[in-house]
Length: 396
Image 1 (cartoon, helix red, strand yellow):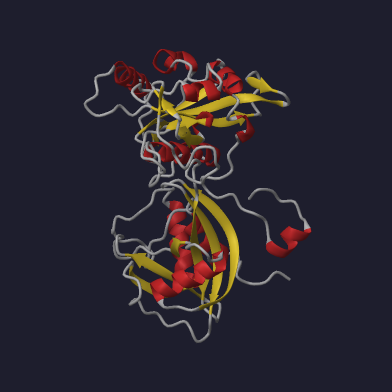
Image 2 (cartoon, rainbow, N blue to C red):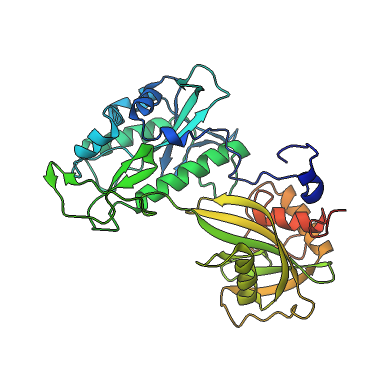
């Protein structure tokens, strides 16, 4: 829980919750991303921490579950200082033939003293750095990246998948989620959607631009220059996930994706479409996937999901009394969907919480009739809110 303060809102809606991948300790100070003097100071400050990422995975100490970070002295021979010149000068000097580090400025931890300072803001700065070595590359930069990877692995903190293991604590998972989303977006967008030429990462990794020149030669016109476009900035894709309660208030609708083994069930989910509200999206997705028709939809919590850039909007919804029949003919995504008694879901949640935070899709038998996502998944939070906390019932 975020806090236990009693207010009119908490009396009506209950306390807010912190979902996994949210709750970052960093102040993003996003208004300073184009201030290259600040970024240069932050980059070279001895207290600054760099999160190395290989193929979008972080380096994690297995014994503690903490992120492994580097300092500038570990990296300066490889990355130099890409923020030495003001951003306009850097854009004017753009040379697409040169390799450059993919750096993302994440923000500052204001609880740490002795770091970088700008006006009223002071703290330890954080960056993410892509250290993935290009396949079959023998360039000096690739060699420098390989040296960094060797240095990281020598610390005993391997690059570790986070998606299925949930090994990081909440605050470090939030830092990683931000880093992964920005890094993934930069990697996926090396070319301009307007003219097809190479783009340049600016704003501390928070924006990509199509420079007007390349190696001092003017490029052709491009519709993305001189205007604000949504292709220049990272996006978040709204996605709904919903715990559906039957009209009697004693069963929960869960589905099994065809990709998962028999016995593994979760809340129904799907992407929002243009021109629909969250509530409309919930009703449409549930009907398309299960045939169940919904009445009231209430938004409960949200969770950033950096695979690659979803914003999961968690909802609790009630099925209409005459709309509870299940049929899977509309959408082939689900292999099965069922109404489960609250008691069955409670048992499954309790077992999942005992099994640490590993996503168990092994297909092996368990003490409960079904398996559900681990406790750090928003699907788990939604199920628990209904079957343990009666979140589907109105507050009195």
